[in-house]
Length: 160
Image 1 (cartoon, rainbow, N blue to C red):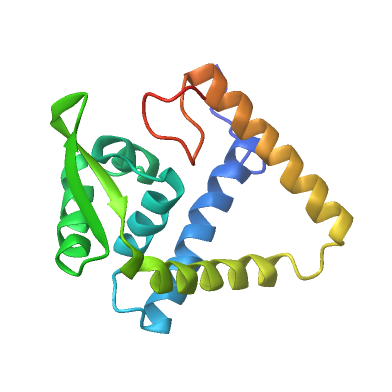
Image 2 (image 1 turned 90 degrees about the vertical axis):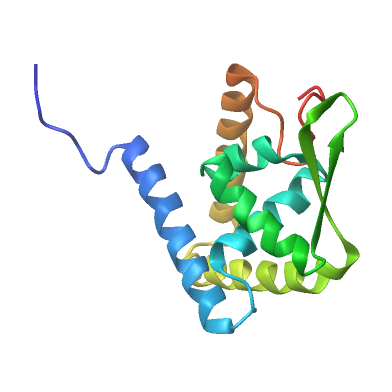
């Protein structure tokens, strides 16, 4: 069995790209002084993308432990940026929703994220960008279907 691994294989490149994008966006968020930690900003943006979903689903989307996301939500809720309510289908579960007070912060995080993407894609032709986005969205969709995961804008329990 070979121990040789190609760090330029597609799986490694996609994983590294995600890790590096996250680090770059988090660094920009910290530099911009958005008055939230990078983790809290990520939680807020993902909660907005879910349009209201279970706290456990948010933790899964962020790739963090439920206790970590609970801390993010506690602090964001104290600032009036998120609310938590009991899931009507399961009283033990909590539904997380973004409040109107979070809109400006979400917009600022979106600007930061867009600036990072624009920077790293600045020398790539628009047609290639469009093709790349179509391909990675298609790959994501196939994986979501195979794994039974909902799409980013859907709540847990909704069909994907």
